[in-house]
Length: 101
Length: 303
Ligand SMILES: Cc1ncc(C[n+]2csc(CCOP(=O)(O)OP(=O)(O)O)c2C)c(N)n1
Ligand code: SF4
Ligand code: SF4
Ligand code: SF4
Ligand SMILES: [Mg+2]
Image 1: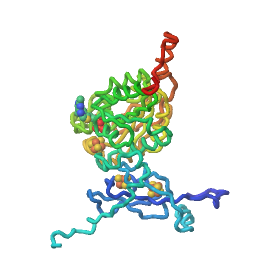
Image 2 (image 1 turned 90 degrees about the vertical axis):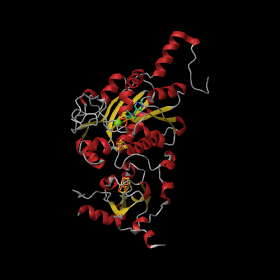
Image 3 (image 1 turned 30 degrees about the horizontal axis):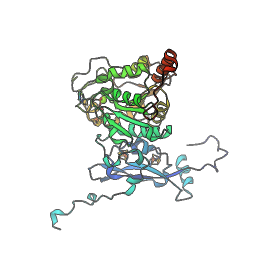
Image 4 (image 1 turned 180 degrees about the vertical axis):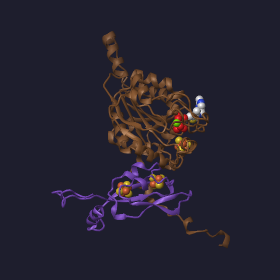
């Protein structure tokens, strides 16, 4: 996102953080979560689960904004997200810079 | 360990996460029955998540909600939801649910079932429950075919689409379910796809709180039969198709929302109107006719 002007409350806005949890054995590798995560937090693993499906793994831990879309769209009840405090205080800044690039 | 018995790769070791017990929907799921039977990339599971989310949003008490399904892949829904739930015979979800609603007017009865179950073999029940404005919420998972029995053409299969009983393409006109529901008397009619999870959940919560007959059609991918026979790819490809081709038109005229094979799909909340429910009509009418002789039935404990 590029702003046409800097929002007045930019410094007060808190970007929520989340941590996706994946129930590997339930996953059937549909890829919905990977496709629709707005932050590209997930990627399909090259590993297989017990049933022979690839499952998602977290590749951009700090980018998750706890929007729960992965949880909503998963047809297998195999992924959800919990709210966390930012592990790296500067990660909001990282996110903003990522947006601008 | 002998050499042959050693795991081939380290991928055979799978960590068991305890996370299963912390899944936010665990109270609404029969977790012991998971993983469910639905194919990879099938959209039915997502509709269940939307239902649970909508139910939570509606703040209805769990004890006052029942779920009824018929037979079919979609009809398996009732078996995975931890509420009072019933897996009835093919086509008979609505009469069973009508009985539940009549016997306990305080109960909110939701039906989750397939297009074939609800509008082919169960079609007559569907139009009459809508006509009576019975207190029911119907969620119809429309995958354009009889999936469980092998992908036969049904009343929602679009013209030209291939099905196992229509190998050269379907030449029968399909039902437009929102039009059928509204013209039969439904007071709430919406259509979404499996992709529109948040909007679907919102519609479900509204429908659950709406007195009378509410109907939600959910267009959902069946990768194994419908998509495979029509070479449409996986469920993910169909989700992408919905993304590019669904047009949101709230309040659209239901006579104009027909679905044509692989063309744009009009979605949204089409109808939301007020009309006395079956119970209100009955009670008011009989009160008027019989005066004090009429004692309205209020439920099993209140006779
Ligand atoms: C009385 C009766 N007739 C036929 C069947 C066979 N049958 C089982 S499921 C089904 C169709 C289900 O289609 P739909 O409701 O669209 O569900 P889907 O599998 O597509 O989700 C049929 C015809 C049956 N079980 N009982
Ligand atoms: S909660 Fe949202 S941002 Fe986080 S992984 Fe899931 S879809 Fe991505
Ligand atoms: S949406 Fe669910 S089933 Fe599909 S890949 Fe992601 S975790 Fe697995
Ligand atoms: S056959 Fe089709 S509708 Fe049935 S579970 Fe498989 S993908 Fe879903
Ligand atoms: Mg069907």
